[in-house]
Image 1 (cartoon, rainbow, N blue to C red):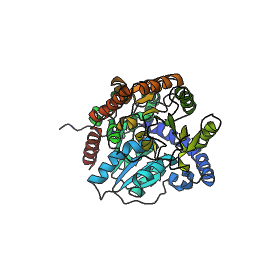
Image 2 (cartoon, rainbow, N blue to C red; image 1 turned 45 degrees about the vertical axis):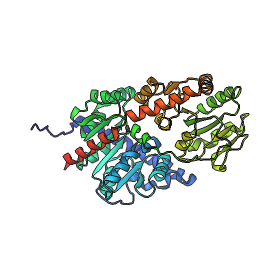
Image 3 (cartoon, rainbow, N blue to C red; image 1 turned 135 degrees about the horizontal axis):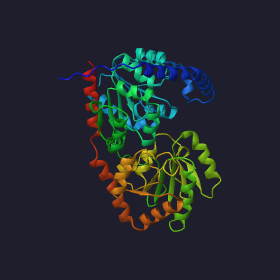
Image 4 (tube, helix red, strand yellow; image 1 turned 120 degrees about the vertical axis):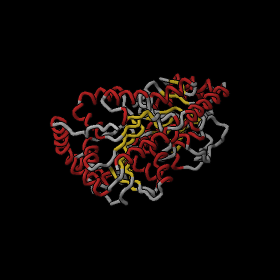
Length: 435
């Protein structure tokens, strides 16, 4: 059996990491003060637990899994895998870190007290080492994209296997990482395994130097996660279920205005159509409320009512964790972050409940998913309010085409499942090799 020579960082690689750490030392006090100030002003801010940013958190049970999920999207993507691990290893503790308060809220909503949550510390070696000494994980699992040089280095120094699951690496990110290869390349050599979510991501990791022995194309676990969404009762009683419902999910500025303009166009022929707006970030709820206040539409907040008034034209869903509930009452959906240049959010969530999907042209976060859905007629690219309105009116006048598009999306989801099993196998093998 051939044994590879253990990796040892060069002086140049170590020097670049030390320079990176020195710059963080200069910035960390400023960031810490800002968090403390935000904690005094906002009850749900990560600044309310500032010591966690310094690696000082409540000690969980040792020898468990530590998952890092940046925010809401990564928490949701990893949730099916975490649940599978908890089912297979009920006595093994699970900790989850996030960097945002919305990510923290989603961890709480999905797992309650079944997992230990804290905010990811600053990426200084001494702080990351302190965190690892307190948590004592048997494996560290990073979801999708966020890699921190000192965190990975601290894991490598302590022989803790570190994995990237559902790995996403766009062409733009690959070019950027290639420019700082003395910082990025050592991280790849210290990782136990990368599970790439698509061909593009696999290729980019390969070109940046990831060895094929530690790189697997598992495909996207979002297919498995979305397929596990259970159908629930309506999240609120609609005035009449005969009303057409358009859901604008995970929207950013200016997508709410685009959808309102589309709704005005739709109402000329289908005046009963109801729009449910679900902003991506809760801090924008009030901004969208002001936009609705200045509009000609009658509207309500979901948190203020248990039923939609008959004359209501727009619902602002201002509650966290209710997007999938909204998709379950939708006739068609627009997935946000795609007219706004954010790369597009998860189109598999409406596909899971057989809802036909629209997105803007910017879908670079999930190109394979969007390509599959579009190729099978489940996703329509709409770049403007006029195109969204035209698409909705087409589906309303030909309901069978809408049903067929929704069914195609669900079929794509079901036929691409399997990444969850492949990812879990990579983690298990990596832990076994590390022993």
